Image: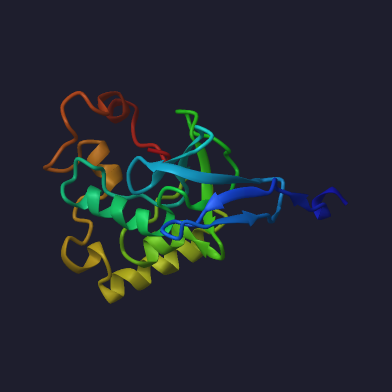
Length: 191
């Protein structure tokens, strides 16, 4: 019976980017979901909500900002889907947070799964660990993007996957002093 309960989010007043108009937004949310109004983007797979919550998007990985110019390109693509002011519905999976205290989530902008759209457009690769609700869907999106040579698959082809870059397994390494402890501990699914 508890699984059939509908949870109603608070009604939010949000600005539509570029419209100068405010809208009221309410949606039925399952217990594993929350609402986030995007304040800023950290990179192509992480953002901060206006309430200060930091969010890492699940099942996807984008180039690090130090992987120039690819990291900045990924961040710009995420901005087209979920830029500042965008209202997102965050859906959680098995692990609600990572070791850095970030919320781990699938982000929905209306009916669009932002995580999937980034992968489908070739701006991110699938990175899976324990959170797997949409794994097959994301893997299909990656195969399709790769086959169609979309986004980074067109020119760069993810020659150095972000997880390998963070672990110093590529010729171009992160900036000195950054991520050294992560490389010693091994790769994680939430970096």
